[in-house]
Length: 441
Figure 1 (spheres, rainbow, N blue to C red):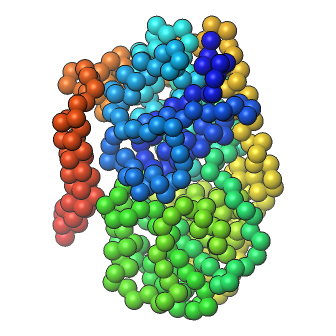
Figure 2: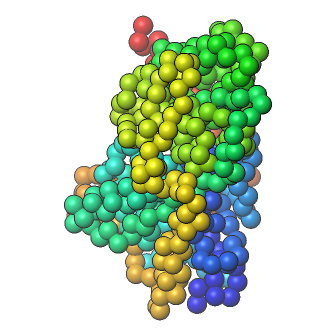
Figure 3: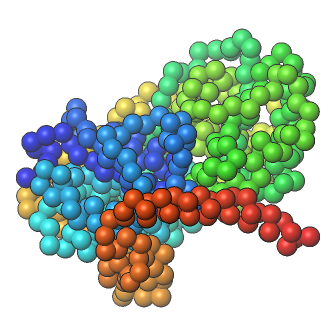
């Protein structure tokens, strides 16, 4: 009998960054059937982007338990979650390769289990690159969530195009939308630029954007101009940030009405009159609230920037236009296709997912074995490398020498591991960018 039949719905979320933890945890609460109480256990996959305590605090999502794990440790935890400790739902909030590795590892640990959790995965935000690659790496989950009608159609087309079962594709919306609708200008009028860690990625382009933001603050001294940052120097997010704006701004001379801000995006949007970005999902959060929103065209409308996704939105504009007083008018049909649900239909956006999960939990005899599209027949030259990155063999078993493959880490190993992880993060965040820049001289 599923655990949900006798007690609160037990959900596990495995995430590999602060943003994906936020997406996974909020998705878990959105898709729970009915008014079921939820017991949420969080697992943070150890790696370069494992969130810090400050990042977790900023996300604002609480769990009943939260711990760091390697892939092998997580699979061991899932294998041992039986009886009263069994899970009803597992949310894989990972990059595509991580999802694929976990699907194969879970297929192995659950091969003799009569009843297993419903496995859910999806995307944190806008899908503007590696559509086929990312989707096929996520195939095999019971639900592959699409954040909009447009994405659901694209996802099904990819799966059907390669002969894979597309039944798992389920249309929902971004789980972190919400907040009060925009009710008019604040005092002072507030312009917010939502920065992104990796877009754009060159010093020239990032300096240009910072200079234009500062110029806008000087042109409009009556306004408050905020640079909303995702992380502090030395912290990692879903994407690596090699040139933090905090460092670039040290060489500038911003006016008093210009400030750097951190914190929860929703709290910043509470006081925003104009949201400006290159291609951040903050634009969708802003559109959901009906806040005037601009996606910048200054650096071109290009796939590399991700702002091509907003073609047809009515939101594309340049700093010159904004300085002159332009205000965007979003296209209602485009907004509706993106799952933004500014018309008030957001609360029903997750109904299909809730119904499907409830039906799967009630399925007599449990669920069939996990069967990803990628296997040693369909992708013999690709799959082993994907699994090996997570120390798994092609059959989903731990490779010899895999971290903690044979036992849980003791206190000494945990201390050594934390020190090594800190050194690794420092190398990736601080040393590697310097070496790359020196190589370009």
